[in-house]
Length: 138
Image (cartoon, rainbow, N blue to C red; front, side):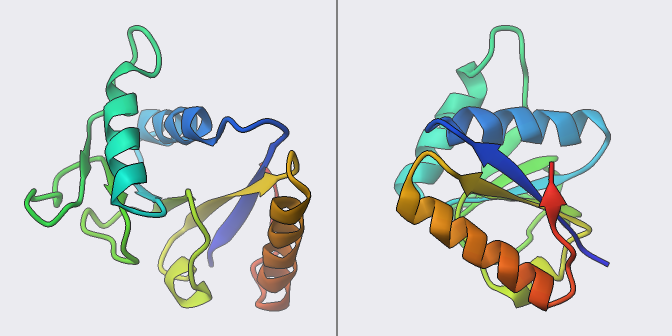
């Protein structure tokens, strides 16, 4: 059964939290997939993961179609795929409920710093509950 957890964002700091959460899951021995909006966001996150915190190392790859990601512990993607067989999905953007069901743990964001984004987060929370995911705060 998929577990859905929400991380409350009171400031626009999603990129830093994407890295922190990926590091946390990687340190626990889990493969991670980070789903982002588009190629620009993927390239930015790919670069940021190398420098986000002094002394931190996140072995990762951007699944841009030209790199083999099967063995990578952390993969950044823009498509609803899972090239490294990750049990953990960190959602940099919303995705389908069918896709979410493929993972053991899904981490979403409640972006409460913006009214419109907060309402969209609440709507996803309701949808998760209606589909039996029993979401809760991280």
